Length: 221
Image (tube, rainbow, N blue to C red; front, side, top):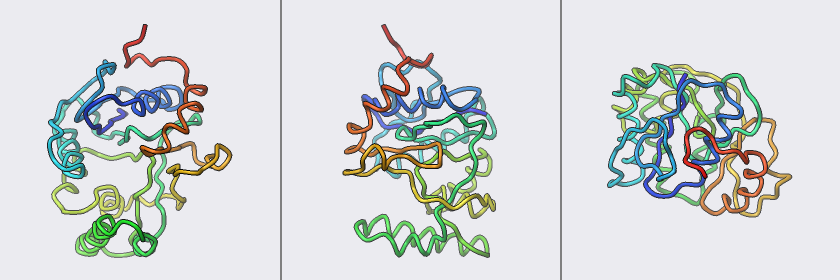
């Protein structure tokens, strides 16, 4: 099963250490980067112009994955800020509880909250039963044909995919590391961590210590 990253343009140290962590801790076939890429990356690549809004760029990248015959039918969807910090044999499904509860928790981002509400409306239209939020910063296994159908709807693809195809999974809090989090607080029973633009600088020392060796997907001296 391939690992597929959707990425922005420009330098990307998060991607470097994400790939290193995946190579060290998760068996896989190939690595693909879709969208933009840093100059040091030497692996499989699908170039998609990143000239739209962030959400639209990501959707364009995902559609390109679905069309690419060489990408494995089932693949692990990664982001450049996902780090696999413990050895695992495969990626299991996780969600963060009911989507309605997730919506209630969002206080500081009206735009994101609206996207969640719209996603809930779409899921209610296409399926019945309990509706879970899959908006966790962890890898997620997807199928190209199924994802292509999901992308036809105006919704957040992780949650729509998880509910539309009854992925199920274990409930867990998010592993995103926010400002002010100590190294001790970063620890989780899940084998994943995720950074943001502010906290990657706090995590880089830990990641360099854990994954000092360049992967085969990067130029190095």
